[in-house]
Structures are given as C-alpha cells and as structure tokens.
Amino acid sequence: MKALYFAWVRERVGLAEEEIAPPGDVVTVRQLIAWLSARGDGYAAAFANPATIRAAVDKSHAAPDAPIAAAREIAFFPPMTGG
Amino acid sequence: MAPQPAPKVRVQAEDFDPGREQALLTQGRRDIGALVSFIGLCRDENGSLESLELEHYPGMAEAEIARVADQARERWPLQGLTIIHRFGRILAGERIVLVIAAARRRADAFAAAAFLMDYLKTRAPFWKKERRADGADGDWVEAKSEDDKAAERWR
Image (cartoon, rainbow over all chains, first blue to last red):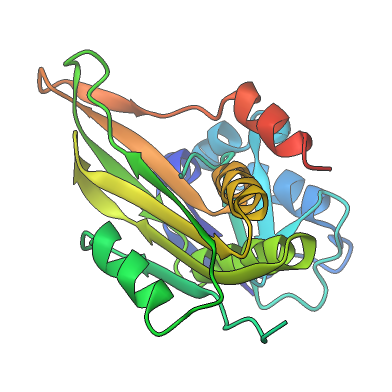
C-alpha cells in the first residue's frame, strides 16, 4: 500500500510518500502508526504523540481502530488548519 | 421544490472572483431569495506574517469538501452552493476560501454557510505554514480547540 505524509508529519518523516508492506498482524491505523514509528528516528519524531496524528484511508478520514486491510492509500497528517 | 444543482467545489492555486462566482450561482435563477457569501482572508498578524503556504491533499481535499457540502444540503434546503479553497503561497491580504450558500430564505443560507466553514476548518485536508515578515522560518499553524468546538455545536 502507499503511505502519504503531509505538513510536519512529512517534514519529520522526510518523505511525501512511499510504498509500505506492513506485516499481517498490523491490521488497524493505530497499529500501523506503531509499526511506522519503529522504522527510524524521523518516523519516531513524527508519530511521537499519536493524539496529534490524523489518518485517512483511501482519501476518507479514518479513526485509530479503522481496518487497513483493503486500503490502497493511507495518509497521515496533523489536525487540519484550512479555511 | 426545484431540484438542487450539484454543489460547485474547486480546489485551486489561483485567486477567485467572489462577485463573478455569485453571479454564476444566481444566473437565470428566480427561486433564490438569499445568498450568503463568506470569504476567508490571509491576515498579517499585526505585520509579523508575510504569507501562508497552504499544503493540501490532492483528491481528498475535493472529496472531503464535497462530503461536507452534501451534509449541508441534507440539513438545509439550499438552492445552490459554491465552495472554492486555494492552496500554495497566499500573501497577507489575499483571499483563501470562498463559501456561497443560496437558499429561498436567509436563515438557511446563513446557517449553511456557517456550518460549511466550521466543518471545512476541521475536516478539509489543508495545512497552513507561516512565512514571517522578518524572513525567519515560520511554524505550522496549530489547530485551535475553538475550531473543534465550533464544529461540535452542529452535532
């Protein structure tokens, strides 16, 4: 699946997007965040406070316990500040 | 009641012309009794801010605005809706966002415009980074709890 990062999540991870292949026991958004956090210092910094992270699965907002099995694209970003 | 035309949703780098958008929305229509427009501008924070860099999630931005627009149309009898949100670099004083709600009656148009802005702020995937007037690196704008409260009041 494709992972996308926006705003300061993107800056800390150091990538705008990448292909990821999490193991089969990573089945929710929350578990994916934990798995990503362990990939390196940038990821750890980006996901240090999961309460400030929002996620979208296939371009729709997704809660931490949302399943990721069928996802083609998962995005992570801070709370939105548009408008 | 005449069928509602589909909401017009645009996400674009370039500026928009509010007067032209109002005219397009009401062109040839005789059923609209109230038009409420909201324009969000980039303020200079007492001279300290030169511009904002608005990052967005292409595809989701349009989809999420359309979802919020559909919610507004379910809640209020609207005769038309235009929503335009810019991205990229926006200088202090420039326009960022436009919401126009058209209805038979003003109460519906006012309420829908306020709802749309409250929901766009907390749900549409846009993020603002400040560029300071003194040239120093600015910060990402933090989401405000007031914005969450403003969105909560519609539940």
